[in-house]
Amino acid sequence: MQVDRKQEILLGAAKSFSMFGYKATTMEQVAKLSNVGKGTIYNFFTNKEELLQEVVISMIREMKAQAEQTLSPNSSFIENAHNALMKLLQFRERHLLFAKLIEEEKAIQTPAVKQMLVKIEGEIVTFLADRLRIGIEKKEVRDCNPDLVAYLLFKSYLAMIVDWQLTHDEALHQDEILELFKETIFRGIAIAP
Image (cartoon, rainbow, N blue to C red):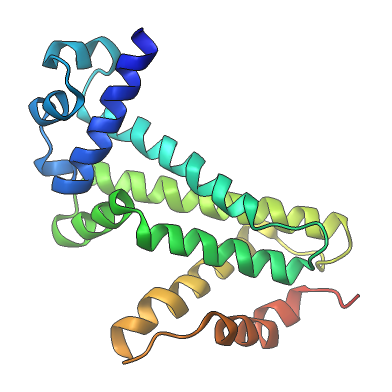
């Protein structure tokens, strides 16, 4: 029964953070959205920041699972890397909580939100670095610093998908992005079959 209550609280908190942001969310709102008393929340979580951390960890798990589903043992490293990056960034755009955290961080720079965004980015880069290490072991990727290359890939994809749209009338198509990266970054790290 307690596991159900904790899950209800996490779902209510995710809703509240998505609707109001971290700073504007109160424990009273979380309690109301979770159909529990405010005191029940404190049986599981010390404070709002701990609650946000737990919600974000759950979101990261979901994001990684979706990216993992795009990987195919029959595809090249480049295709798998591209598909995983696109899925991670699409998740970022579609997931209301992620979008709200980014919006809040830009607008009011809440320290707890900034810390969570850094954690999410770190998890994405680690996910990519792990895939690069596998690629190196399989001799599909040149020997490199996987952490630095993963960071470069993530930030480059982010720039082409998110930042590009801020200054251009049209978004780039997935195929355009893949071709661009095949001709630049992937060409430098991939070992031809």
